[in-house]
Image (cartoon, rainbow, N blue to C red; front, side):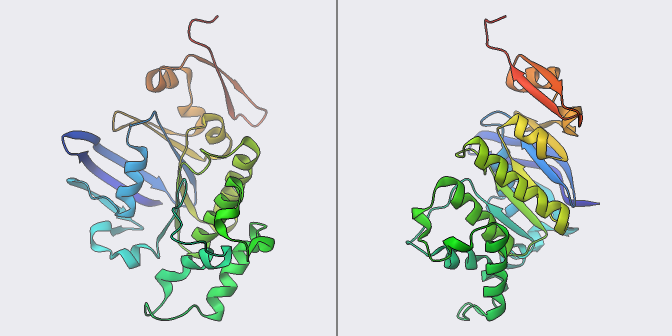
Length: 262
């Protein structure tokens, strides 16, 4: 079953066309990677799904509901976001920062967090091994620690869908692997649907159930990592010369070739 359906989506920044007639079905309870070169529309696509941006034409359906008919508060109960980074308004404690995931569930904006809200936040902090950071100021955390805090906030929001916008771009390999492993565990164990904009092709190959490749604002290829991460596709999309090998689990592993090299 499709959790997100996009029909003929067009979006421009002024005269610059970014998304050009995007048709895309994203399956539920899967981790889908969105890949493509810089400027191809990956993050813009996520922002249209979230409703932060609105295309000039086309439709988006979220869990069988037309996105334009869903209020932002109701949408926040369906979709959560793990950004590449977050601008903190103040030096909040980690616990308070993660509790922000409960805001869409408050009956009134002046209501405080309930005991249940705090228990939900604490549960996800513990799941992500952040219980020792609860009273730390969020800006004092390392990049890897803070990305886990952002994921904890998204999980605390208790949505069916999690969008991740380049969540590993500022992380070293160990932290990137750890974060994606946590995301995949939640997809498998809780039946969540995750869509992640990624730059690391091998990271996408390891963790994604399906990959969507964008080029020039259009869907160029969609399928499993083995179906999409081919020598031909990588040449066409990235102008990348590479060799591809396969693990025992049939996961592609990409080794780039230097331009001008042998």
